[in-house]
Length: 135
Image 1 (cartoon, one colour):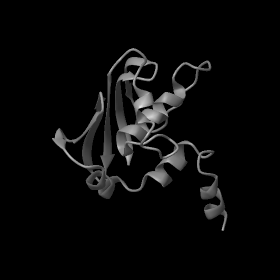
Image 2 (cartoon, rainbow, N blue to C red):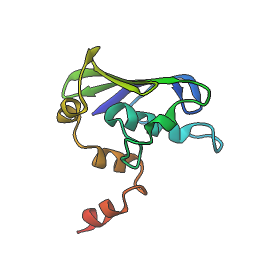
Image 3 (spheres, rainbow, N blue to C red):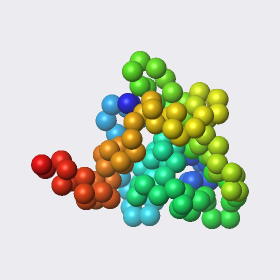
């Protein structure tokens, strides 16, 4: 899977941000400028969980003072372009795949399990994965 773009509305400290990705991407900057938030947004858009794999804390991603957020990610997978948009409005979460309502189960059939993907971004989050990889 190759990420082509990411668009954030009211996600953590990003009121609005749009990123276009190339083959290699580097994020750098001072502490608390939103670098980790980009990884959090990608994991949230694809799997609807935090980087620790928790669904319960995703409402903490809504920017302070706002009631909703939206994250749109465009990925290339097996020669197909997938546009995935996940939003939270109050207590309601919406997941769209190519502008059609879908479920996480249907999406995960296409993109795979969240643990391996999250580990590729945040290797310190799942230390038990390191044990599996070394055996």
